[in-house]
Length: 168
Image 1: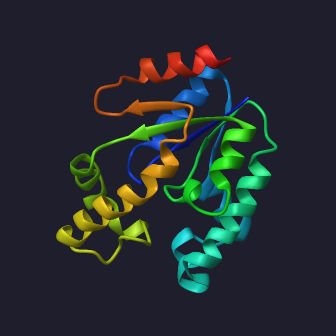
Image 2: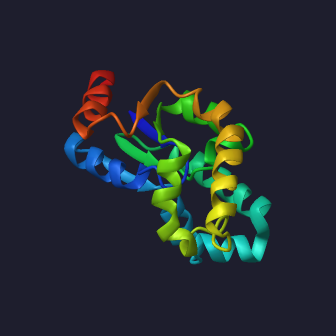
Image 3: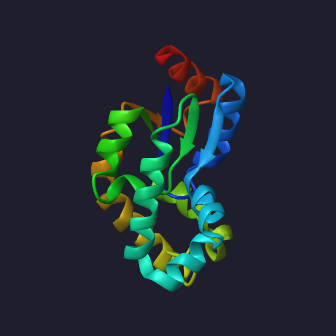
């Protein structure tokens, strides 16, 4: 069984995914780290060299490779479900889990991590807020196709764990 964690950057996919994998005795794969290890470049570097379109093609191929795994929690990138037919691949090969935070909570989390996130690294707080609202609205149509939806403000780790455990 594969579980894919989807949601906006900064929502906690990697942090939550590592804990879930440990608790379920599953492997954990962070899609961005997988890409970085395979291509020997950071995501930011790949964005700088190939642009977003080039990165999304690499990401698509990596998702196809990872979709062959078993007993794994996968933390996708925030945009992964929104390009090509990635959300269809995710839902066909595993169980998707949408981790949700509102735009104010995302802004609070992302302010301190802008430099390692190529899509927001040069934005002021005002620009970042506008970007989050606009992009979250655009991506929501993909995220809500997930089999499981979790509000990260009101849910505890045990709630998420129990939802996944019930799928096994």
